[in-house]
Image 1 (cartoon, rainbow, N blue to C red):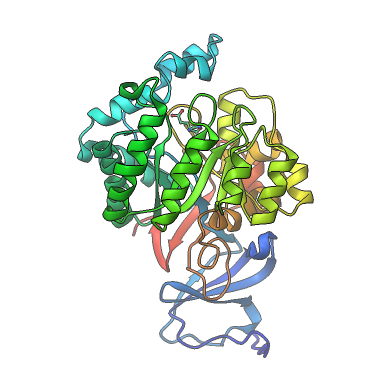
Image 2 (cartoon, helix red, strand yellow; image 1 turned 30 degrees about the vertical axis):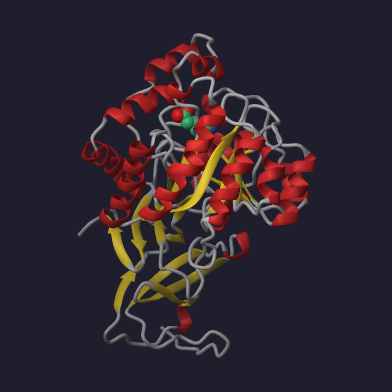
Length: 418
Ligand code: NIG
Ligand code: FE
C-alpha cells in the first residue's frame, strides 16, 4: 500500500475502526457522491473520515480493520414514515379490495384503520411489543437503521400511550434509532362517530398534554382527508402541538386535494406525506417553508391509485423528496425499503439517485435528523450498510433479493450478529 498523505483530507486520530477496500456512495447533499477504492473510518459512534485507500496509514495498531472486498457502503436507510406497531390482520380487506371495494368504502363501513384500532386496543402492551420487535428485526435485515413509528391505532388515551410506550421500548431494545410520532388524529374512533370535533377536543385537551408528559413522542402527525379530519381540525391540533414543543407533520392530499399541505407548511411542518393530489399552490407553500415531501409508493401501489404525486414540480421547486415504506397493515404492508425504491422509480418516475437520496438523507431531513443521519460524512452517526452489489442503482433495480452483507449502527455491527 502506498501512503500518499492528502493534506486536504488527512486521516484523523482517535479512529477505532476502519472499513477498507470499499466503494462508497456518501449521498451527501442528496447526490451519489461516489468514491471508488475508498475507506471509511469510525470513531466511537460517528464517522471520522471517508477517503481514498492510498491515504490510509501503512499500519494500524489499535484499529479494528474490516476488508469490504470492493463492496458498496451506503448510509443506512432512514424510514421516516411507518405505522409499525399494530395488532390484527387486514388480509381479508386486501381480498375485498381485489374484488373491487375501495379503501374509502371499507373505511366508511367500519373496516380499515378502525378495524386495526379494535385489535390494537385489545392487545396487551407486551403482545404489541413482541409483534413490533419482530418487524423491527426484519427491517434491520433490510438495511433500515432509523425508523419513525406513529401511534394512531389506539385513538383513546390509554391505547395511544400504550403504542408510544412500545415505540419507546423498541428504541431501547432494538439496534435501530426509533423516533415516535403521536398520530391521535388518524381516524375518528367508533365511540366518537359523527362527533369528530369532540374527538379533536379530546386529542387537544387530554391526549396531547399526556403524550408530552410521557416524553417519548417528538412529533405530532394527523390525517387530513374526507375520511378523516378537515383542515380546521388539523389547525387546532397543530397549534396545541406546537405550543407543547412538538414538531408537526401531516398525511395530506392522499386521496383528494384537501388543502392540508398548504396549512401544514405554513405551520412549519417538517414534512407532508403521500401528496398524490397536491396542487402547485400547495407545493409552493412547501418550498417557501422548507417542508420535505415524503413519497409513499407502497400505499399508492397497494391502493391501486392512478394519480401520481407532482414529482416534476418538486424538482422544479427544489423540494427534497423522501421515500418511505409507510409500513402498516392496510395500505402498505411492506417490510423492506428496496421494493419501495423500485416502486418510487417505476411508478413515480424518480431516478435511482433520487430514490436512494429519498431513503437516506431526505428521509433524515423529514425527521429533523439531517445533521446526524442519512449521509456518510465526518461527524455524522456511523450508520451504514455494506451491500454486495455492482452499483447503488442495483438497490432500486433488483427485486426479490436484499444483497446485504453487514449493517453498522452508531459504529456497532447490528447485523449479522456475531
Ligand atoms: O399512511 N393514510 C392514512 N394512514 C395510513 C394507512 C393506515 C391504515 O390503512 O391502517 C397510511 O396510508
Ligand atoms: Fe401513513
